[in-house]
Image (cartoon, rainbow, N blue to C red; front, side, top):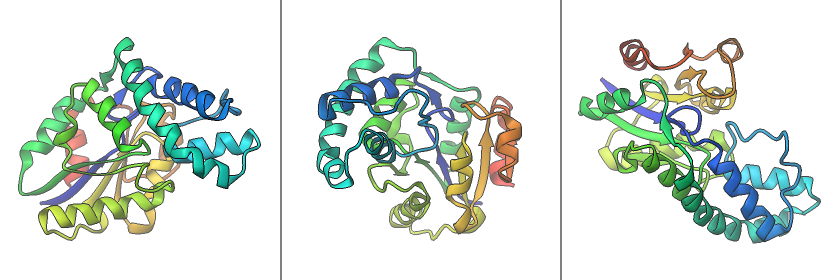
Length: 230
């Protein structure tokens, strides 16, 4: 069996109880003096740089100014997230610890990784706070690698190839996520997609995006494993 298994974080691996959104809000106010039109704006499935760009465009800033200030936004965001995460309950979602254990134990040409819109340092903070162990995920592609989510699967596949010497392609690459954007991001590569309704999108909405599999949650670990390795 050959699989590169790429997990989304928020709403898929874990719930961080709004810590990321609060940290983004505070960082934007400090760097730009405004949050932009954040109320009602959905972060789900978007990369962190995409979120900042959308919100600051909505506040009237041009792209050159946004790009210049982006590194400072994320420097402050990571520092604020480290403090914010201490005061909230960060929990793995149903079935996640057991599935991660099974994937890690599979060995061979099964590579456990992540694909997330979080910048890498933010991803580490959240995954460690949930007790899942960031370094167990041997490869990853992050919002800090590219602002456009559809570019991330190829980055993760390249890193997996460099790590284990295997060229993963097509349905050997599995993307697990909780939004339509997760389902769509690997479509051009023909990857396997597993959608899970533990975020803000219900099962019927995810099913309409035509993933390979869709679950209400991943509490049935055997069924989820079968969907990944069949």
